[in-house]
Length: 165
Image (cartoon, rainbow, N blue to C red; front, side):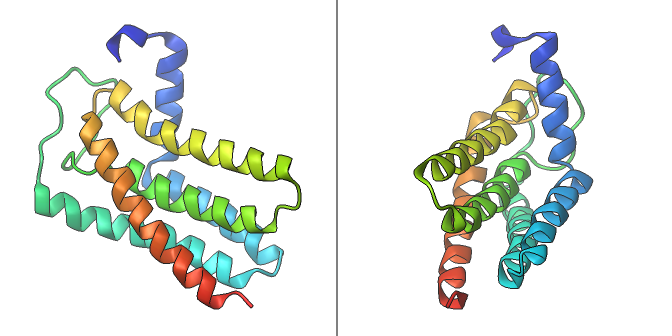
């Protein structure tokens, strides 16, 4: 990843660091939940909050179980806490994944479904890859975060399936 270093890549990594902060994920959650609420999709709004809060909680538990130190590299920016699994990857997979699932169900055209899927995958990948690029996570931290977030997303999808008419 160090070979990809550039001012533009640094900027993207910083942007995703801000978006993946507590305030950033809170803002994204409020935005998505607000859109669902305005569209009279209360359960989707509630499950959007559940995606973020549950992803954060599961990640906090896992970090304390594994207590893996962060890479000993010169990082692009500071990161606190343990390394495994990545919170940005966990919450990103759960939150972005849930929003995509809910919007995908409403999409009417194949083009809209494709756009939702591509955007969700790209955003989720960027939440993880930028952490490796910045030197604050190992690749396995990201993979573990994606696995944990996706497992929780599966639970949310099953709950959503039971709630939808």
